[in-house]
Image 1 (cartoon, helix red, strand yellow):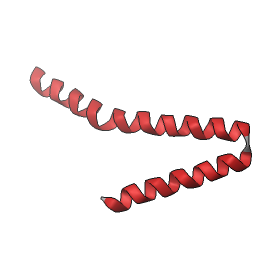
Image 2 (spheres, helix red, strand yellow):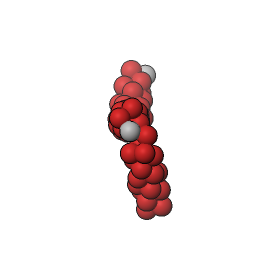
Image 3 (cartoon, helix red, strand yellow):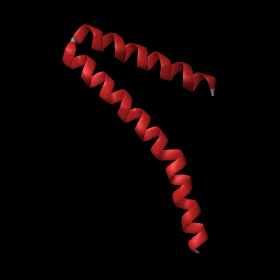
Length: 59
């Protein structure tokens, strides 16, 4: 049972936390860019959506 719980947490850390940290990093970059300049923030959001669209279409 302990081995099963350990594998579950390792799987959780590998799959979910990676994505969470990437999304938090992108969100922080977008927030910071918006606080500097709204137009640059809009361009960054468009670039992020474009990148995510290409990554999702590749799968």
